[in-house]
Image (tube, rainbow, N blue to C red; front, top):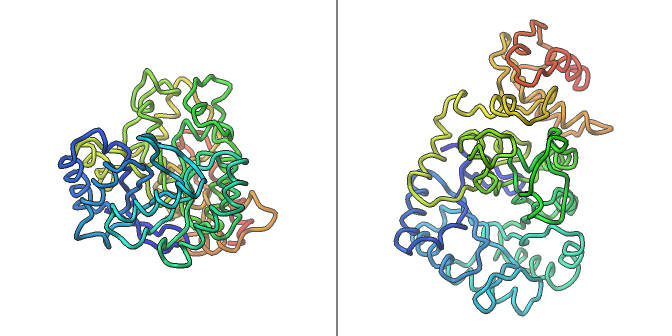
Length: 381
Protein backbone atom coordinates (compact mmCIF):
# COMPACT_ATOMS: atom_id res chain seq x y z
CA UNK A 1 0.00 0.00 0.00
CA UNK A 2 1.18 3.51 -0.83
CA UNK A 3 0.48 6.45 1.44
CA UNK A 4 0.02 10.14 0.75
CA UNK A 5 0.14 13.17 3.02
CA UNK A 6 -3.39 14.50 3.56
CA UNK A 7 -2.78 18.19 2.98
CA UNK A 8 -1.89 20.35 5.93
CA UNK A 9 -3.07 17.68 8.40
CA UNK A 10 0.27 15.94 7.86
CA UNK A 11 -1.42 12.53 8.22
CA UNK A 12 -0.07 9.74 6.01
CA UNK A 13 -3.21 8.07 4.66
CA UNK A 14 -3.52 5.04 2.42
CA UNK A 15 -4.33 5.78 -1.20
CA UNK A 16 -7.15 3.27 -0.92
CA UNK A 17 -9.50 3.97 1.97
CA UNK A 18 -12.63 2.44 3.47
CA UNK A 19 -16.08 3.98 3.05
CA UNK A 20 -18.26 2.40 5.73
CA UNK A 21 -21.62 3.12 4.15
CA UNK A 22 -22.43 -0.46 3.12
CA UNK A 23 -21.64 -2.15 6.43
CA UNK A 24 -25.22 -2.19 7.61
CA UNK A 25 -26.12 -4.61 4.82
CA UNK A 26 -24.23 -7.39 6.60
CA UNK A 27 -24.22 -9.07 9.97
CA UNK A 28 -21.85 -7.71 12.58
CA UNK A 29 -19.27 -10.49 12.50
CA UNK A 30 -18.96 -10.28 8.71
CA UNK A 31 -18.55 -6.50 8.69
CA UNK A 32 -16.03 -6.49 11.54
CA UNK A 33 -14.02 -9.14 9.73
CA UNK A 34 -14.18 -7.11 6.50
CA UNK A 35 -12.80 -3.98 8.19
CA UNK A 36 -10.02 -5.97 9.85
CA UNK A 37 -9.16 -7.59 6.53
CA UNK A 38 -8.91 -4.19 4.83
CA UNK A 39 -6.66 -2.98 7.62
CA UNK A 40 -4.40 -6.03 7.20
CA UNK A 41 -3.80 -4.93 3.59
CA UNK A 42 -2.62 -1.48 4.68
CA UNK A 43 -5.87 0.54 4.55
CA UNK A 44 -5.71 3.04 7.40
CA UNK A 45 -8.43 5.64 6.76
CA UNK A 46 -12.14 5.02 7.27
CA UNK A 47 -15.16 7.29 6.93
CA UNK A 48 -18.15 7.07 9.23
CA UNK A 49 -20.89 9.50 8.28
CA UNK A 50 -23.51 6.95 9.34
CA UNK A 51 -25.33 7.85 12.56
CA UNK A 52 -26.99 4.49 13.20
CA UNK A 53 -25.71 2.62 16.27
CA UNK A 54 -25.20 -0.64 14.38
CA UNK A 55 -22.74 0.76 11.82
CA UNK A 56 -20.85 2.66 14.49
CA UNK A 57 -20.65 -0.38 16.76
CA UNK A 58 -19.22 -2.52 13.96
CA UNK A 59 -16.47 -0.01 13.18
CA UNK A 60 -15.71 0.45 16.86
CA UNK A 61 -15.43 -3.28 17.38
CA UNK A 62 -13.15 -3.67 14.36
CA UNK A 63 -10.81 -0.95 15.66
CA UNK A 64 -10.47 -2.42 19.15
CA UNK A 65 -6.80 -2.89 19.95
CA UNK A 66 -5.63 -0.94 16.90
CA UNK A 67 -7.48 2.40 17.14
CA UNK A 68 -4.25 4.39 16.91
CA UNK A 69 -3.38 2.84 13.55
CA UNK A 70 -6.63 4.10 11.98
CA UNK A 71 -7.45 7.61 10.80
CA UNK A 72 -11.18 8.19 11.27
CA UNK A 73 -13.35 10.68 9.42
CA UNK A 74 -16.15 11.23 11.94
CA UNK A 75 -19.02 13.49 10.99
CA UNK A 76 -20.49 16.29 13.10
CA UNK A 77 -24.11 17.02 12.22
CA UNK A 78 -25.08 13.51 11.16
CA UNK A 79 -27.68 12.37 13.71
CA UNK A 80 -30.05 9.48 14.38
CA UNK A 81 -33.57 10.56 15.27
CA UNK A 82 -36.48 8.16 15.68
CA UNK A 83 -34.61 5.46 13.81
CA UNK A 84 -33.76 7.72 10.86
CA UNK A 85 -30.70 9.60 9.60
CA UNK A 86 -31.15 13.37 9.95
CA UNK A 87 -28.60 15.98 8.89
CA UNK A 88 -28.93 18.90 11.29
CA UNK A 89 -27.17 21.86 12.92
CA UNK A 90 -29.47 21.79 15.97
CA UNK A 91 -27.18 21.38 18.93
CA UNK A 92 -29.61 19.33 21.03
CA UNK A 93 -29.10 16.61 18.42
CA UNK A 94 -25.57 17.38 17.18
CA UNK A 95 -23.80 17.05 20.54
CA UNK A 96 -25.33 13.73 21.66
CA UNK A 97 -24.73 12.23 18.22
CA UNK A 98 -21.05 13.13 18.27
CA UNK A 99 -20.60 11.95 21.83
CA UNK A 100 -22.26 8.68 20.80
CA UNK A 101 -19.70 8.33 18.00
CA UNK A 102 -16.82 8.64 20.45
CA UNK A 103 -18.38 6.15 22.84
CA UNK A 104 -19.07 3.52 20.18
CA UNK A 105 -15.54 3.91 18.80
CA UNK A 106 -14.10 3.49 22.33
CA UNK A 107 -12.03 6.59 21.67
CA UNK A 108 -11.35 9.95 23.23
CA UNK A 109 -10.75 11.61 19.86
CA UNK A 110 -11.63 11.66 16.17
CA UNK A 111 -8.75 12.30 13.79
CA UNK A 112 -10.75 14.18 11.17
CA UNK A 113 -13.81 15.96 12.55
CA UNK A 114 -15.98 16.42 9.49
CA UNK A 115 -18.48 19.27 9.22
CA UNK A 116 -21.14 17.03 7.74
CA UNK A 117 -22.52 17.45 4.22
CA UNK A 118 -22.89 21.09 3.27
CA UNK A 119 -24.05 21.60 -0.32
CA UNK A 120 -26.05 24.84 -0.14
CA UNK A 121 -25.04 28.42 0.56
CA UNK A 122 -27.86 28.70 3.10
CA UNK A 123 -26.56 25.71 5.05
CA UNK A 124 -23.01 27.04 4.77
CA UNK A 125 -24.03 30.38 6.26
CA UNK A 126 -26.03 28.72 9.02
CA UNK A 127 -23.22 26.33 9.86
CA UNK A 128 -20.43 28.89 9.85
CA UNK A 129 -22.20 31.36 12.13
CA UNK A 130 -23.32 30.44 15.60
CA UNK A 131 -23.37 27.49 17.94
CA UNK A 132 -22.53 24.76 15.43
CA UNK A 133 -19.17 26.07 14.29
CA UNK A 134 -18.41 27.20 17.84
CA UNK A 135 -18.85 23.59 18.93
CA UNK A 136 -16.59 22.32 16.14
CA UNK A 137 -13.88 24.80 17.11
CA UNK A 138 -14.25 23.87 20.78
CA UNK A 139 -13.78 20.19 19.95
CA UNK A 140 -10.67 21.08 17.98
CA UNK A 141 -9.24 23.33 20.70
CA UNK A 142 -9.73 20.52 23.24
CA UNK A 143 -8.09 17.96 20.97
CA UNK A 144 -11.25 15.88 20.72
CA UNK A 145 -11.01 16.32 16.98
CA UNK A 146 -7.43 16.55 15.77
CA UNK A 147 -8.20 18.22 12.44
CA UNK A 148 -11.24 20.01 11.02
CA UNK A 149 -12.64 18.70 7.75
CA UNK A 150 -15.81 19.12 5.71
CA UNK A 151 -17.84 16.98 3.33
CA UNK A 152 -19.54 18.41 0.26
CA UNK A 153 -20.53 17.55 -3.30
CA UNK A 154 -20.58 21.19 -4.42
CA UNK A 155 -17.32 22.83 -5.60
CA UNK A 156 -18.69 26.27 -4.69
CA UNK A 157 -18.90 25.16 -1.05
CA UNK A 158 -15.52 23.47 -1.40
CA UNK A 159 -13.91 26.73 -2.46
CA UNK A 160 -15.46 28.57 0.47
CA UNK A 161 -14.10 25.87 2.78
CA UNK A 162 -10.59 26.30 1.39
CA UNK A 163 -10.82 30.05 1.89
CA UNK A 164 -11.60 29.71 5.62
CA UNK A 165 -8.01 28.70 6.33
CA UNK A 166 -9.06 26.47 9.25
CA UNK A 167 -10.65 23.63 7.27
CA UNK A 168 -7.71 21.35 6.58
CA UNK A 169 -9.22 18.68 4.35
CA UNK A 170 -12.39 17.98 2.37
CA UNK A 171 -14.32 14.84 1.51
CA UNK A 172 -15.53 15.43 -2.06
CA UNK A 173 -17.37 13.43 -4.73
CA UNK A 174 -15.07 12.78 -7.69
CA UNK A 175 -15.54 10.66 -10.82
CA UNK A 176 -15.35 11.36 -14.58
CA UNK A 177 -19.11 11.91 -14.85
CA UNK A 178 -19.47 14.27 -11.88
CA UNK A 179 -16.47 16.26 -13.10
CA UNK A 180 -18.42 17.34 -16.17
CA UNK A 181 -21.41 18.60 -14.18
CA UNK A 182 -21.76 22.27 -13.19
CA UNK A 183 -21.97 23.14 -9.52
CA UNK A 184 -25.32 22.40 -7.92
CA UNK A 185 -26.89 22.35 -4.48
CA UNK A 186 -28.93 19.28 -5.47
CA UNK A 187 -26.87 16.08 -5.28
CA UNK A 188 -29.61 13.98 -6.89
CA UNK A 189 -29.32 16.00 -10.10
CA UNK A 190 -25.74 14.78 -10.46
CA UNK A 191 -27.04 11.27 -11.09
CA UNK A 192 -29.56 12.39 -13.72
CA UNK A 193 -29.38 11.92 -17.45
CA UNK A 194 -26.47 13.28 -19.48
CA UNK A 195 -26.66 14.46 -23.05
CA UNK A 196 -23.94 15.27 -25.54
CA UNK A 197 -24.11 19.01 -24.88
CA UNK A 198 -23.25 18.39 -21.23
CA UNK A 199 -20.15 16.34 -21.98
CA UNK A 200 -17.72 19.20 -22.31
CA UNK A 201 -14.70 18.21 -20.29
CA UNK A 202 -14.09 19.08 -16.66
CA UNK A 203 -16.38 21.83 -15.39
CA UNK A 204 -14.32 25.01 -14.77
CA UNK A 205 -15.76 25.44 -11.26
CA UNK A 206 -14.62 21.97 -10.25
CA UNK A 207 -11.22 22.42 -11.93
CA UNK A 208 -10.71 25.65 -10.02
CA UNK A 209 -11.69 23.96 -6.75
CA UNK A 210 -9.06 21.24 -7.28
CA UNK A 211 -6.50 23.93 -8.06
CA UNK A 212 -7.31 25.82 -4.87
CA UNK A 213 -6.91 22.66 -2.79
CA UNK A 214 -3.49 22.01 -4.30
CA UNK A 215 -2.39 25.63 -3.88
CA UNK A 216 -3.54 25.87 -0.27
CA UNK A 217 -2.46 22.38 0.80
CA UNK A 218 -6.02 21.33 1.62
CA UNK A 219 -6.17 17.56 1.26
CA UNK A 220 -8.97 15.76 -0.55
CA UNK A 221 -10.46 12.38 0.17
CA UNK A 222 -12.86 10.98 -2.40
CA UNK A 223 -16.39 9.65 -2.15
CA UNK A 224 -18.71 8.37 -4.91
CA UNK A 225 -15.75 7.43 -7.06
CA UNK A 226 -17.77 4.82 -8.98
CA UNK A 227 -20.82 7.07 -9.63
CA UNK A 228 -23.03 4.76 -7.58
CA UNK A 229 -21.78 1.83 -9.68
CA UNK A 230 -23.12 3.32 -12.91
CA UNK A 231 -19.65 3.85 -14.40
CA UNK A 232 -18.97 0.12 -14.01
CA UNK A 233 -21.95 -0.70 -16.23
CA UNK A 234 -21.98 0.18 -19.95
CA UNK A 235 -25.77 0.47 -19.99
CA UNK A 236 -25.87 2.99 -17.13
CA UNK A 237 -22.64 4.86 -17.84
CA UNK A 238 -23.20 8.35 -19.31
CA UNK A 239 -20.17 7.70 -21.51
CA UNK A 240 -21.74 4.61 -23.05
CA UNK A 241 -18.77 2.50 -21.91
CA UNK A 242 -17.84 0.73 -18.68
CA UNK A 243 -14.80 1.52 -16.55
CA UNK A 244 -13.04 -0.86 -14.18
CA UNK A 245 -12.68 -0.05 -10.45
CA UNK A 246 -8.92 0.34 -10.93
CA UNK A 247 -9.43 2.87 -13.73
CA UNK A 248 -11.81 4.96 -11.62
CA UNK A 249 -9.48 4.81 -8.63
CA UNK A 250 -6.66 6.06 -10.85
CA UNK A 251 -8.84 8.86 -12.20
CA UNK A 252 -9.59 10.07 -8.67
CA UNK A 253 -5.99 9.80 -7.51
CA UNK A 254 -4.73 11.87 -10.46
CA UNK A 255 -6.87 14.89 -9.53
CA UNK A 256 -4.94 17.74 -7.88
CA UNK A 257 -5.04 17.64 -4.10
CA UNK A 258 -6.35 14.08 -3.77
CA UNK A 259 -4.78 11.81 -1.16
CA UNK A 260 -7.19 8.88 -0.81
CA UNK A 261 -10.29 7.38 -2.40
CA UNK A 262 -12.75 5.80 0.03
CA UNK A 263 -14.40 2.79 -1.61
CA UNK A 264 -17.40 0.91 -0.31
CA UNK A 265 -17.04 -2.85 0.10
CA UNK A 266 -19.39 -5.78 0.45
CA UNK A 267 -16.80 -8.54 0.19
CA UNK A 268 -13.12 -9.25 0.69
CA UNK A 269 -12.88 -9.79 -3.06
CA UNK A 270 -13.93 -6.17 -3.58
CA UNK A 271 -11.27 -5.03 -1.12
CA UNK A 272 -8.72 -7.10 -3.03
CA UNK A 273 -9.86 -5.55 -6.32
CA UNK A 274 -9.44 -2.01 -4.99
CA UNK A 275 -6.07 -2.72 -3.37
CA UNK A 276 -4.89 -4.36 -6.61
CA UNK A 277 -4.56 -0.79 -7.85
CA UNK A 278 -1.20 -0.64 -6.11
CA UNK A 279 0.25 -3.36 -8.35
CA UNK A 280 -1.79 -2.64 -11.49
CA UNK A 281 -0.06 -1.99 -14.80
CA UNK A 282 -0.35 1.28 -16.66
CA UNK A 283 -2.70 -0.44 -19.11
CA UNK A 284 -4.94 -1.59 -16.28
CA UNK A 285 -5.07 1.95 -14.85
CA UNK A 286 -5.76 3.53 -18.22
CA UNK A 287 -9.02 5.46 -17.90
CA UNK A 288 -8.07 7.89 -20.67
CA UNK A 289 -8.45 5.39 -23.50
CA UNK A 290 -11.87 4.46 -22.18
CA UNK A 291 -13.00 8.09 -22.21
CA UNK A 292 -11.39 8.80 -25.58
CA UNK A 293 -13.04 5.74 -27.13
CA UNK A 294 -16.47 6.45 -25.67
CA UNK A 295 -19.41 7.37 -27.92
CA UNK A 296 -19.94 10.49 -25.82
CA UNK A 297 -17.14 12.66 -24.50
CA UNK A 298 -15.53 16.01 -25.15
CA UNK A 299 -12.06 15.99 -23.67
CA UNK A 300 -10.27 16.80 -26.93
CA UNK A 301 -7.23 18.97 -26.33
CA UNK A 302 -7.56 18.67 -22.55
CA UNK A 303 -4.84 17.10 -20.41
CA UNK A 304 -6.35 14.72 -17.83
CA UNK A 305 -2.92 13.84 -16.32
CA UNK A 306 -3.41 10.22 -17.32
CA UNK A 307 0.27 9.52 -18.07
CA UNK A 308 -0.18 8.16 -21.59
CA UNK A 309 2.57 10.54 -22.68
CA UNK A 310 5.21 8.41 -20.91
CA UNK A 311 8.01 7.69 -21.43
CA UNK A 312 9.77 10.94 -22.23
CA UNK A 313 13.23 10.42 -23.79
CA UNK A 314 14.72 13.05 -21.46
CA UNK A 315 12.80 11.90 -18.38
CA UNK A 316 10.26 14.72 -18.01
CA UNK A 317 7.21 13.78 -15.94
CA UNK A 318 4.90 15.37 -18.50
CA UNK A 319 1.67 14.76 -16.61
CA UNK A 320 3.01 16.50 -13.50
CA UNK A 321 4.41 19.42 -15.50
CA UNK A 322 1.01 19.81 -17.15
CA UNK A 323 -0.74 19.65 -13.77
CA UNK A 324 1.48 22.37 -12.29
CA UNK A 325 1.17 24.43 -15.47
CA UNK A 326 -2.63 24.28 -15.28
CA UNK A 327 -2.55 25.19 -11.60
CA UNK A 328 -0.24 28.15 -12.22
CA UNK A 329 -1.63 29.51 -15.48
CA UNK A 330 -5.08 29.95 -13.93
CA UNK A 331 -3.65 32.65 -11.63
CA UNK A 332 -2.48 36.22 -12.22
CA UNK A 333 0.67 35.28 -10.31
CA UNK A 334 2.23 31.83 -10.02
CA UNK A 335 1.47 30.56 -6.47
CA UNK A 336 4.69 29.95 -4.57
CA UNK A 337 3.49 26.50 -3.43
CA UNK A 338 2.98 25.42 -7.05
CA UNK A 339 6.33 26.90 -8.07
CA UNK A 340 8.04 24.93 -5.28
CA UNK A 341 6.41 21.69 -6.40
CA UNK A 342 7.49 22.36 -9.96
CA UNK A 343 11.07 23.14 -8.98
CA UNK A 344 11.21 19.86 -7.06
CA UNK A 345 10.72 17.90 -10.29
CA UNK A 346 13.89 16.15 -11.42
CA UNK A 347 13.44 17.28 -15.03
CA UNK A 348 11.89 20.58 -16.06
CA UNK A 349 9.84 21.57 -19.11
CA UNK A 350 12.80 23.50 -20.53
CA UNK A 351 14.53 20.16 -21.16
CA UNK A 352 11.92 19.20 -23.77
CA UNK A 353 13.64 18.46 -27.10
CA UNK A 354 10.44 18.85 -29.11
CA UNK A 355 10.45 15.31 -30.48
CA UNK A 356 6.64 15.14 -30.07
CA UNK A 357 6.70 11.37 -29.57
CA UNK A 358 4.46 11.94 -26.55
CA UNK A 359 1.82 13.63 -28.68
CA UNK A 360 1.28 10.47 -30.71
CA UNK A 361 0.39 8.64 -27.50
CA UNK A 362 -2.00 11.26 -26.09
CA UNK A 363 -5.62 10.06 -26.41
CA UNK A 364 -6.93 13.64 -26.41
CA UNK A 365 -4.64 15.29 -28.95
CA UNK A 366 -2.93 17.67 -26.52
CA UNK A 367 -0.15 19.79 -28.06
CA UNK A 368 2.36 18.71 -25.44
CA UNK A 369 5.52 20.18 -26.92
CA UNK A 370 3.92 23.63 -27.12
CA UNK A 371 2.71 23.28 -23.54
CA UNK A 372 6.24 22.42 -22.40
CA UNK A 373 7.49 25.67 -23.96
CA UNK A 374 4.72 27.62 -22.24
CA UNK A 375 5.44 25.92 -18.89
CA UNK A 376 9.15 26.65 -19.20
CA UNK A 377 8.38 30.29 -19.84
CA UNK A 378 5.91 30.48 -16.99
CA UNK A 379 8.18 28.87 -14.40
CA UNK A 380 11.44 30.19 -15.81
CA UNK A 381 13.10 26.82 -16.26
